[in-house]
Length: 153
Figure 1: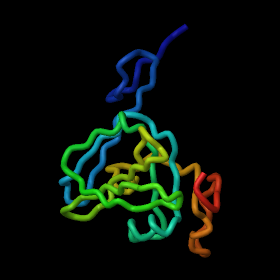
Figure 2 (figure 1 turned 90 degrees about the horizontal axis):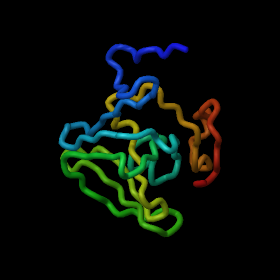
Figure 3 (figure 1 turned 135 degrees about the horizontal axis):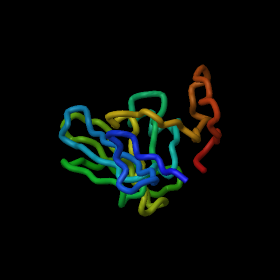
């Protein structure tokens, strides 16, 4: 039996064990930076009207991460929104440039929803789910292979 050495420049600490390289990201002006220390629990596109307004786009591309795997430097401001559940959604954004960074909700304690567009590199990220597709623009094609739900699951 032979065990291959990790590729040069990899982040592997133990032979034969794959360890994710930390993903880094931040706001447009650089005042807020973060590091993701773990793999996303889910990768989803949200077409809800609040995500459309908050992103200024057709949808929001999101990574659901354990809060313990999220490390931030710099201060974000928080806008308290209300989800369709009636529960608060805490939308964190840079107070200097306005970039949305993440959202937290009481319905998912211990998790943060990171706005994937703020990542330095989105390589290898593929959405597995689309939610609130009842609010998606009709001319936008569904993401190949993604499960689609009219509302949040």
